[in-house]
Image (cartoon, rainbow, N blue to C red; front, side):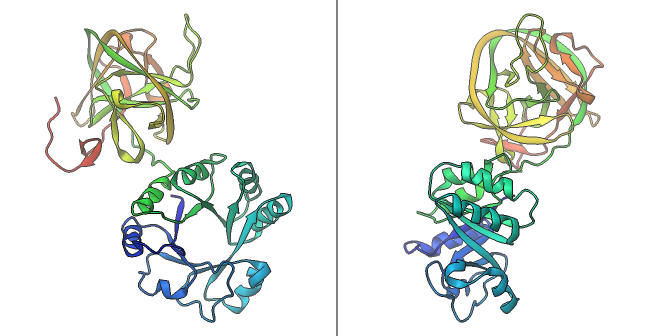
Length: 367
């Protein structure tokens, strides 16, 4: 999880509601320029004092971290010796080559570096992230809005360790926290045994074209029911009559579920340009990727039934064609039209029922 800091220094209207929202969604830090702002905050949130353009107060109150401008406040290392009860960080505003080098030096040496990039390009941030590759400190980058926060979290795939953002309205704290959920948890895949296949006639299937290059042992989970899915492989593996398309998964009939961001499911028919889905490899390792487009076309379909060791049944409906494939243990690629009872495929068995894609604890019968 990336760090999310909410900057309330200039928040006047609805401050109380915004703070309650930040605490409810468990943002990591609240940033203020007056220690008095921290008095009512619980110990579960980091209290970050950032007196930008102002002298340091006589007392830091309950602040956990103090961000300083060395030109005004002195060096963080020297301040840390005088005030061992708090952690200090350096603020750097990047406007040219010299200040970029200052940011790189801070990233290599300071426990906390708060960075403000004045130019819209993210290339300077890439340089700082690369400079900090072997450091143990944390980079916090200032974002103007949630959209920029999402970009900052993904720069060079590693992203900034955290983002500081000033809220414009109620709802921004929740959106910032959601954008910080960069990491995707691993899944416990299970082996499923094929019990039957049948040709079921025409229907619409969806090819999901993503903005990512799939690995050979990677695809997306798809199933007719929310509690059982099979790992469908991408078109990364060679085919005799067409070039590989390593960004594509011929995923299944449009009613099917797939996993998206934040443990949600989506119907394949709901996906569109910009949607976030979960790529999964044969070890259960996951990453969130972006949909570039979805191609829905009428094709003959094949229904595949399988069963888990606990007796739970799983169904997947795919395009009825040899080149549509699923993955088995060890990354074995299996042509869907050649599957037969007794074959083993990889799948996933979510435990929760779903309501509009969200996991929910309620009775739900799918058949």
